[in-house]
Length: 222
Image (cartoon, rainbow, N blue to C red; front, side):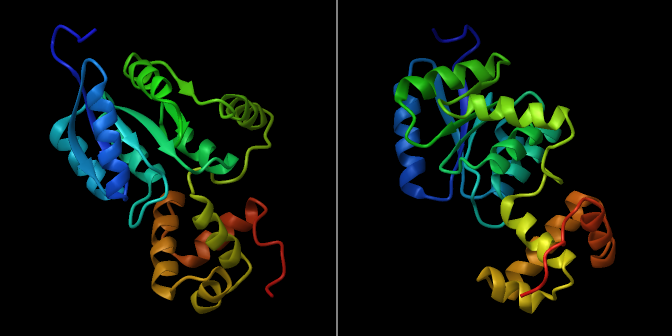
């Protein structure tokens, strides 16, 4: 049923045009929904949400510039009335945990059935938490480990940022990190800037101290 004050408004965030077009067509086929904006990365997503103040954001995780986890964190802080539903191919535990820690209310894998997406959108707008098949049990396990002190360190970091921080903690310089991870030195520098912000440190030395205190950097540089 369409709410009396209008349709449920949605912003779509995905760096693939075909995916966004498919999602728009699907969501607008549901009764009581209207897509009011689109974004191709997390930075644009924050702007679109601040502009349109939608009821819900459908958020990808792996995107250029600002990823979906950081975008979720910024959106939840800036627009707490907007729910975030992650729809991603990423299903490893750290990504799921990071997204939920950032404030996402739901997590579905791409390929979810139409009925699942419809139900999930309505659920997160109503303030519920919802997870796709196979995700719910793992999320409960992740939070249980967190309660017993065994959650992975720095859940706010993306898996790639954690890889970079691990190598920084080992004492490697940017060029060596870039070679080890198969990325450009500029990309490493961008990841480091994001890591400094998330860990609330001002320089590389402070990041190394925090990382080593949390058990990172124990491996030997190769």
